[in-house]
Image 1 (cartoon, rainbow, N blue to C red):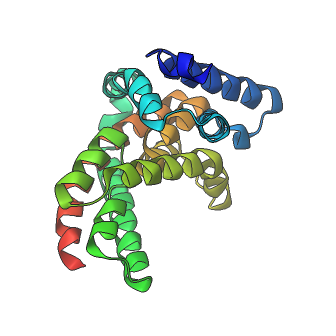
Image 2 (cartoon, rainbow, N blue to C red):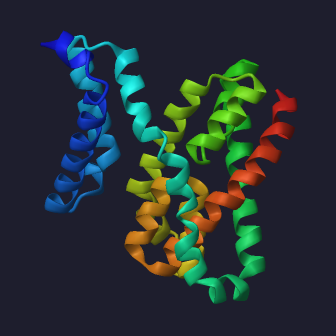
Length: 230
């Protein structure tokens, strides 16, 4: 049976979509961010591979069909931003410096963490792009001599944590301005933070979308500089 499934190039696509849909269903039913669709689908796919012995490489090759849609989906985030163009113009300085502060906080915290725990250079540069979207993060990691596969895992983990806990952290810090909330979620948790921001409101979603683009550019430049320090 497993041999038959491994022979299908579309099984991974089916499993990925079905498990993600199940995660969305559970999240809507129980109203809990712990049932994050990406987290649920990841657990299901990993569990399936472990229990059945399904070939990991074949699963990855099949899921690549979904990965091809990642970049176009990221580009489509420009649509809500266009709809909030007036808000962007009115808060341009705050948006720029807010994103810059978020990027620097991420890079500095990774530097201190890796310095304290004695990480080597390859591991250090692997974690530097953890707060940006996957296509950019993988490219940065590879160019700096890191491990792109581990970078992807750190990006996913960062996104899930931001999606689940980001809104609660904002509440604890009494951050209520929609622009500030959107910038924080997008800069700290890239696409998954943006998905959460869009659930909150259109302004939050648009600002979070913008943050993905600008923080990605800033991180590419910043990571190249920070890579020289360790």
